[in-house]
Each structure stands twice: as structure tokens, then as C-alpha cells.
Length: 489
Image (cartoon, rainbow, N blue to C red):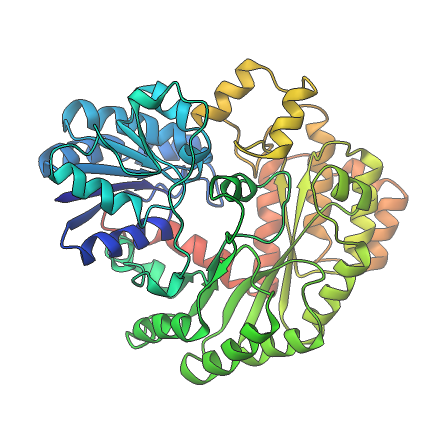
């Protein structure tokens, strides 16, 4: 069967894995891609530039010309507004069945089926269910008798939508079909995106990962590939000579001491390229930090989200202490690894005093970068459920979340009150890596941050300045991607 995947904005590992599985079974797979550097909600969001560069109409025409047997979309809340529009056009012009998968569709299957822009929804992981669906479609009854985890319009009235079977042994999956995206945007190969496992061991209230865990039945959801398997994938692409940085997108990379020991030795010997990963406070000790450094880790992001332990524990579902944050930061920085921290502005229960406390906390800790994410409610999260119960979100808000019409999380998110004041703190956070700690403390104690102009362009300018200072490879790769020549759609 000829299968089209359609995507906007960024490389998606899920699509690459599905393509590899489908090609392994003899199917023809093609990607129609809209890079949308200013509308894909990657780093910079510019609606005018996004409209001028939109390729949605061309993708619909290409899909009609290709005459596919199936069209698949990986759905994310932030970009679902685009998916819905293009999917409707493809169903009308191409006449091919449209299947939604991915996080957004998996957590809102009933709403997706009721929207009328998808013929089926694949809930959870698709390496088992999607090939089974294609096989049944070739036999003539795929949509009438879908496999486990795939739902069609006749299921819209269901009370529950159990997820597809998960892949328990990740080494058994073919390596992702990276060429699918690299052929469209060759610059992506310079920062090779990979995961060493699936699932997160933590249960943050604002993250969709917890909802995906429930769909998988909870048990055996956190899985990891063997270090040998991970290194073999990287070796094959390293030989091409285009990789500059390996980007591990695992929710948390720093768990599992035995695995890290095996990985560090093999990676250093067989790959030897610098890499980026995510850490969770308290998951690092001196041995693990040494292993990461010796293997080649040069940049790490750690989620902190709030400097108030009560808010983190009660509202965000993060039990780590400030002491754990400070100790993890010390271990990372002492080894010369660049450290970025994530902070959520607008957390439930947060006040100006909490932001002042955070500024002092980060000022003393001195990370190399602070990334601010404005409070955004996502489907399937405990935080969304609580906000609904408290009456903080109405029916119109829920519709916007369902339709992907929510404000960009980097420029205000769903924060409604005190945006100007909170933006001043976002600017202050961006100044923290640039200025001496005593200056930050003075500015906070004296309230000087209140005189900072609350302008989002100023925030972007400070981010650029700091990126230059620390030679932030991640930031400049995003800029290079935005400006690079692409073969799209």
C-alpha cells in the first residue's frame, strides 16, 4: 500500500519509527512536510510569516496527486489547528482514509472522531496496530474491523478507548527511518535526534506522559533499549560524516546506573560525538555525572519549574527538593557540562513572591540558560482536570485546547492575569546567566525588575545574547534550520 505521512514544523521520531516498520513489511511510504519555521511552535512564533510561508494548500494538492491508500498524521496539541485544516482538505480532495495518531489524538479520541476530519484514530503506540490496520485494509475490511487500539467513527460513543499494544522489547523495532525527514530538511542530520527508551518514571501533573502511561495500562510502560542497540543506530549515521551533536530526547536520561555504565563505555568508543540529554533533579550522583562527562555529554536540561517546594509537590507533582536541584546543578557544572533549567511561569498557586524567590534561587545556582514556559493546559493531564474542577477553565477553553487553538507556550500560554508583571520576571530570568549573582540579588531585593519593559521581543533578544555567550549549539541549530534550504513538501 502507498502510505503518506503528513507533518508540520519538526522532525517526529514516531513517524520515522512507523515508516521503518511499514517499509519493512513491503509498503511504500512518503512524507509530505511543511517546515513552517515560524508557525510550528518550535522557538519563534510569527503569525504573519507563518501565513506567508504556509504550504498546507500545496500539501493537499500533492496528496491528491499521489493517490495514497492511507494518510497518517502525528497529532500534537500545539499544531493541531494546522492538522485539522489540512486533513479536511485531503479527505475532500484525495478521498483517502485519514488516520490520526500521536499524543493529542490518543488523549482525545472521541473528540477526534466527532470532529469529522479523521476516519480512524490510533490510540497509543502504533508499531503493532498501524501495520495490522494496513493489512486489514488491503484485505478490504480495515475500517470496518480495525485492530486493537484503532477506533473508527462507529466507536465515537464509547466510554473508554484502551491503547494499542505497546512494544515491550524496544530492540526489536527497526531503527527509525531518519531519511524520511532528512531528505526534506538536510540540516536536521547535524543534530541527530534519538531516544534510548520510552516512558517517564515520574508523574508531573502538567505533562501528557502520565495520560499516555494510563493508556498503556501503567505497568511496563517505562522501557529502555540496550546500550548496544542505541550505539549501533548511531554508528550507521555517523559514517555519513554529517552528525555534529547527538540529541537524546528521553524524558529523563540520567536513570539506571548499570545501563549508563554500559552506554558510556560503548558510546565513547564507537561514537565519540558530543551529546545533549535531559535530567531530573536527584537522579545524578558523582558516578553518573562522571560517566556522562566521559561519554561526551556537553549540554543538559533539568526541569525545575518552580523554586517553591510546596507548589512543585502539590500543584506540579514533582517531589524533588531544592537541595536536590542545587546538588544536581553542582555535579553538572563542576564537570564543565552546560546546564539549562526549565521554569513554568503561571503555575497554580504562584504569586509574585514565588517568582522573586525563584529569581534569587536561580541567581545563586547560576545555570547557563533558563528556559521559561508559560502555563499551558494539555489534554490528559492532572493539571487540566484540576483546573476544570476549580472552574478555572470553561467550555470555550476546553474547545480551544481540543482544537489546538491555545496560545504559544513561549509567549504567554494560557496565563490570563498579571501577564506584564510575569513577563518582567521572564526577562529577569533571562538576565540571570548574564549578570553577577550579587547584581541579581540587588535587583530583586530592591524591586528594580519592575522597571524592565515587558516586551516579548526583548526576551528574544536576551535569549540570543545569552546563546552567543555560551555558544548554545541547540539555539543556533534552530536558527540554522529556520534559514536553511528545504525540499518541501
